[in-house]
Amino acid sequence: MLRINIVTLFPEFFAGALAISIPARAKAAGGVEYNIVNLRDFTHDRHKTVDDYAFGGGPGMVMKPQPFFEAVESLGAKAPIVLMSPRGRRFAQSDAARFSECDEVTFLCGHYKDVDERVAQHLATEELSLGDFVLSGGEAAALAMIDAVVRLLPGAMSDLDSARGDSFYDRGISAPSFTRPPEYRGAAVPEVLLSGDHARIEQWRADESLRRTREAENRDRSEWQKREQKIADRESHIATTEAMEAKKAAERLRKRARKKRKTDAS
Image (tube, rainbow, N blue to C red):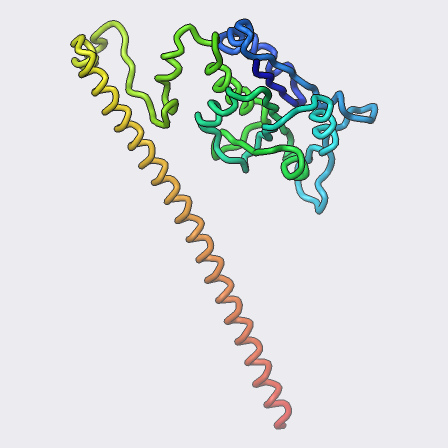
């Protein structure tokens, strides 16, 4: 059985979602146990404070390390211990498959401006993200990852072949899906899917999967190149500005030197 520990400020965020659909079915089948831990249970002041101002100043509050460390220690948790972080590597289907084979996985959910860096450096074994965007907290990201993990457990899905045919299961995007009616508002289902020729259907699905995967990769590559170009342009602008400032400073020094020579000569 997989034991999933969730360390969070908001246990109620998970209560409903884990009690329905695939997460609930996985639990009912005996494939997973959910253990939700409230960070405020590991505070030591009457206000149950979990955050404080950042050293060095700046906006926003930072979550303190102590509640995270004590919460994980109370669990006796083993690796992997995963911190939800926008700085983390992007979560992938391979991570879901890896976690589904573990005995235990712990998800650490941050909130506010940030989490004290010592949690990432000395407690978490890895940092993961859903993508290049910012959420209000780590709960939504953790829930998405948990759903991706538990649907791979025995008994979670009535049709395991359906899960294996999902996008990214074999590192690619799945082919398009269609159901009845065969034509709707002028849009028809591809003829091959209605042919009953299973060999042709499998080939069509393989071709469409490859096409979709390549399109996504090209799109991601294009976005990456755009980001890299923006960074390069910004660095070039900074370098140009610094060079201009250095040139102006040198010119001011030369002017002062000329003025001093004239003064000394007179």
